[in-house]
Length: 297
Image (cartoon, rainbow, N blue to C red; front, side, top):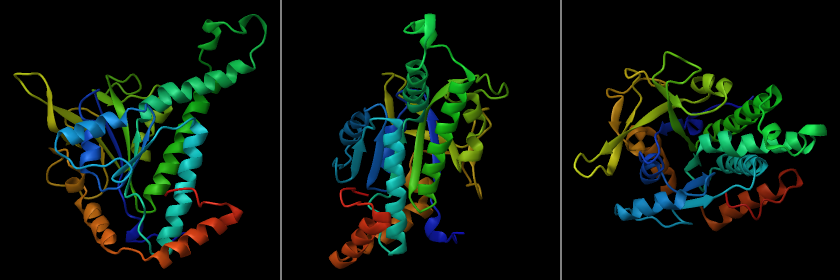
């Protein structure tokens, strides 16, 4: 059993909204840095460019590290290594190299990348008259559905484990209106497999949706948008713990989760010595005979 302390307390958050509502840009602008961004679509640099255009001082490789995974296994292996490295650093009393992990986006990874991967695995073994047919390749069966749901649940659990070590973890998602899996909702995150949708409130500590700030004259998106944790509109939301006075507020995660952001500032002020870093690096290299010397976590 692992004893939990205040060090382990960090937000595990899902943010969803329509395309170009300002989800990724607002997250990158307002979360504690440095950020480790897993960009499943490979377009996170566009959000960084918007941040710079808005006057933010941000350097890729320093304030934010952006990676695009090669496969689902690549994501899982990377996050497992990060979890082990963070656990070692916490035990040794050292600050994490990244205060925030951004998974952008969960919708694209599940509905596109993961679904295609499962289809490819299934079709590699297809024989007979259906072999090579596009119509057969895209048929959905329960094996595929269960595999995608299971793998996405495993990914979510791993992200949650990293949050439990004291790192803010955020997953973004697209919005779908009138979701078929819950007729009582006006809108919810867009995932093609209903079992995962139904479990979202059990997985995440906080679920909020973006209310865009649109200029009435030009029709252009203005920053910042608003972030809502209010269920009055019939959208899927969640706020765990004591609710704040306002559940709809300016999209500023450092203020919404000020208790975490302030804790991060205190930890950054304590800069580890070279000797302290060497101790942790050696411990990581010795971990189960695995070399972590080339992993920047």
